Length: 352
Image 1 (cartoon, rainbow, N blue to C red):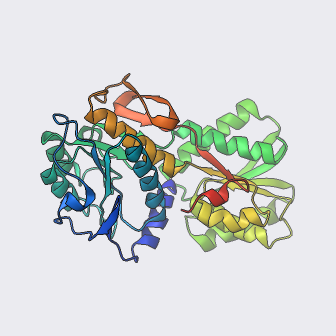
Image 2: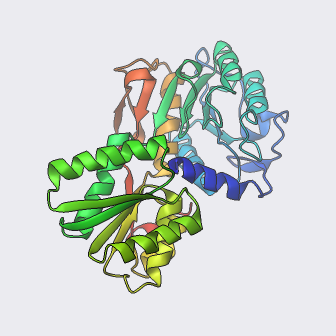
Image 3: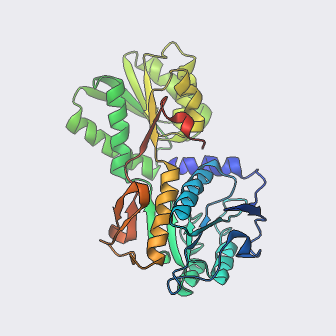
């Protein structure tokens, strides 16, 4: 994003961390050939209804995935299954293959995976499915033919809308705003920006978007672009940055600028990046999805596949504990919902 940027930054940060295989009730080495017994896995798939569910994030030691696994573990404990987490030390495209192969041999009930690559793990996942293991992707999908369900954190329309809503609320629904995006050819950001422009035109006629600038997902470039925007547009009332790199750099600039308190900054960020700026009043509110809920929902999706409540077909529906009822959409996608808003009231509840 930088919703890839989120993953990218977190992965980069996590790559240097010594990793181990963490599991419910203990920690075992991150060697994919190790016995699953330590994690409580074993013998399952659809035939046995075994609710042994293993999370396979892009890499271990990543705060974002620590949070999603926390939600997954809570869900599995809620329906009295067995939770485990395994994963590679680094988020390279094929790093997850050996783990998938081992989990297939162990016949776990389901693998819940955030794919490092949409194609590189497909053969391994399909072998797992052939062996009776259900496959749920979350956060980052594979090609659709390689999994039973994809649990998506949010759709493009929801991501765009929440950013427009936040900036409109923070500037009184009137005035000049600018967008500080990632690179000019970033497909996801460009799609969100197009949707934001439409929302502004349709629903916020008193907000004028004066310019879209690009920080190339580089901290210093984004910092400099923020400074230039404020200098160029003295009446500027807000900046929307749909990238975790951009919003943090913009907040860093504003926090020591005379524009603090005069120019609102919002967009997509992570709590750990933005905490100090929320606490010092530079930023009132920003958004992302709640990875704990994403993991929680993914675990329930896996459980419902294992017990046969759903097959992954469009229109299938299932209950996901405290999150309520969900329906499978086109291409076997389940949507978590709107992005989650972080502000001074809740930011300390999150650590990623």
